[in-house]
Image (cartoon, rainbow, N blue to C red; front, side, top):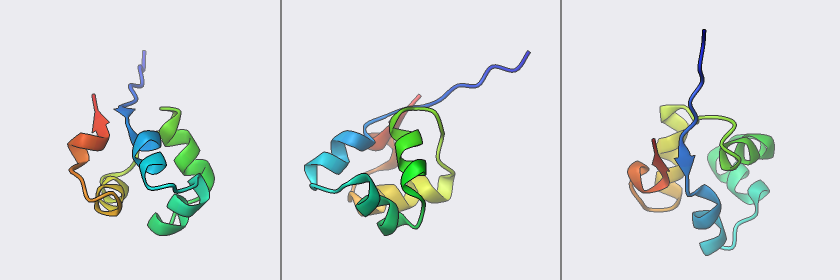
Length: 68
């Protein structure tokens, strides 16, 4: 039996602080808007590369954006 666990995240909160739309953020980190939606809704865990891009965009640690 396969159980998938998705990380809780604060992406929506960080995005709102900078007045970014999902589309704006997607363009900054070179993914689709659907990817940002899926991460925010905890339906998709970002790759390590994407997590680094997101943390750099918000000038924070990965641990500040994502938790287990």
